[in-house]
Image 1 (cartoon, rainbow, N blue to C red):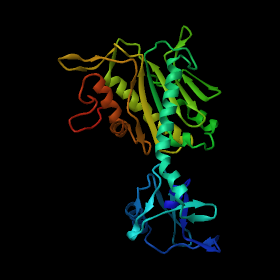
Image 2 (cartoon, one colour):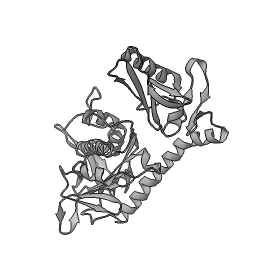
Image 3 (cartoon, rainbow, N blue to C red):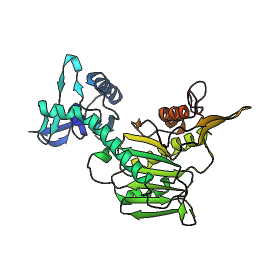
Image 4 (tube, rainbow, N blue to C red):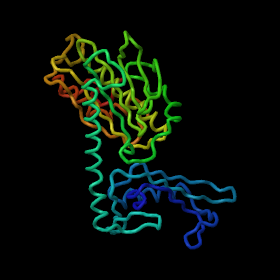
Length: 338
């Protein structure tokens, strides 16, 4: 498991007879499959540091009797994973010849991978922000004040095979622009797939660009005089989840990093409507608000769970409005659906 995770992932099949390393026949296990999967899952949880996210274990029942166990190990972005099972202290990697212990140079590269990935995410985000600020967008926008949402699978930075545009186009209705329930127009462009909001005098309120490498860029104009925390927060939560789901269905693998920024916002009031007290907030003190990154290890199963994952973003936006924390959560910390 550790060698797969420290390389590019893979499947481990238990219940196969082999000769000189070559599979020749099924050799089903006569075991309690649930108990065995639980045991293996516990071994992976307690015997590896750090734990492998999104590890999948399945039992396949064989018609002639018994089970074959399949362990799907994803490419890990928390590498390296060290084996600490029963007091061991070893790192493993994998090549076409099998697993091996990496040398010092390979270990150095594994430890540098995560910081390097974080820097590539940051570089991608701010290169795109610079283009949007300079009006280098696929369409002319209606307003300079814009919400920019990026949902990017880590595999976007992995130089893997690009997404199938056929799969992306089949999911195009899920890549609806922020503030729309469906795209008004969908078309291919040199970067991948572009979906657009309604047109008005040659301009657009919002667009979504799905890049061939798997990243999603959603830009929406914030034309109102104020930025309301509940409304913007709900847009971030709903669209981050829907885009992550659509990417996963198009072949992109989790985890996904979510970033949110608001551009040309200096002087605009940011706040929320409070019962009996009206709008409470304050004016933005800078031109661009770049909110903290959030990593989704898997696609959230609904808006409430996505809201909890997005809380660092929503709290920081509330801080810009002069609130200690986001009003999008109740006293128990549950996300409020509005």
